Length: 142
Image 1 (tube, rainbow, N blue to C red):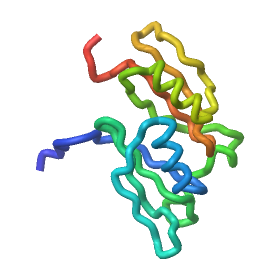
Image 2 (image 1 turned 90 degrees about the vertical axis):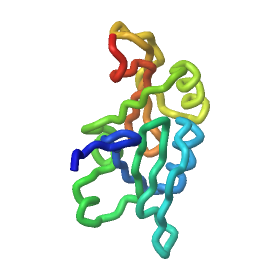
Image 3 (image 1 turned 90 degrees about the horizontal axis):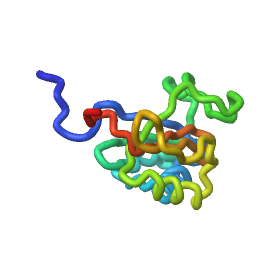
Image 4 (image 1 turned 135 degrees about the vertical axis):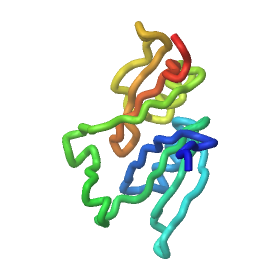
């Protein structure tokens, strides 16, 4: 077994939301994600969802005090801080920024051209998770 993946990214961020259904709708509207899979329990809570953007994927679900969930905190529980942030490469960063801003994303770093190449911005989603978007593609040679 080589460990080689033949599609998509080998690193997939995972997030938890208080209202995962609302988060899924907003992430699709504001950031351009597309639903790949949504699995609910018998009460309609999102146990696991997969959203895709290009070759990348995000997994998410409703917060719950299960084994893994006990190790996670929501941004508003820790003064809006995060210990990690997903970076998403986008083709037209300015248009993406305008779309996110129009959808109500809290912009924490305005759109700007970067010294290292490309452009980028950073924002928070409605539940406070931190996101970074940019046209810089770390896979491309400089």
